[in-house]
Amino acid sequence: MFVASMMFTFPKFGQSCLPWQLNCASTAVTTVVYLGRGVAFAVKSEGLALVRTAFRNQFKPWLCPQDLETWQPHITVQNGVDIRRADRLSNELHPQFTPETLAVVGCQL
Image 1 (cartoon, rainbow, N blue to C red):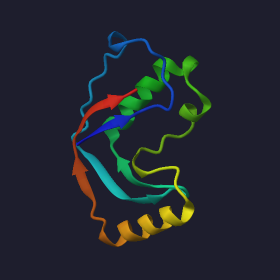
Image 2 (cartoon, rainbow, N blue to C red):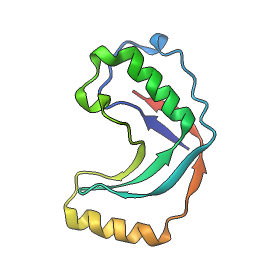
Image 3 (spheres, helix red, strand yellow):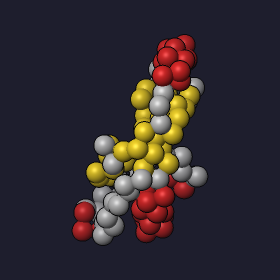
Image 4 (tube, rainbow, N blue to C red):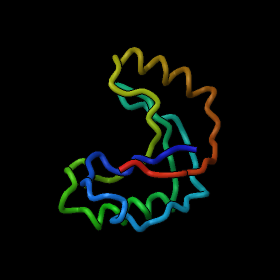
């Protein structure tokens, strides 16, 4: 299980403004993604995408440009490291990666 980070920046309104429930039982970890200076696992979930779209629509005036781009959900494994280090981890993870299904138990805003 993991906690989904839905936005890069998010206004601090408090939980009372967040009426959506996470119902993402079919969340799939699909592949290893090389990020240049890091590595991630790609995530695919229709339920998570619907929640993220609802957040984006509700809080659009306060979001940064990065949050308005196309969302590419992922689980960050490594970030902001030397390219050679990211290459090594990516090359290590690819051959042993197996797609998995997981439960999303919350979201970080």
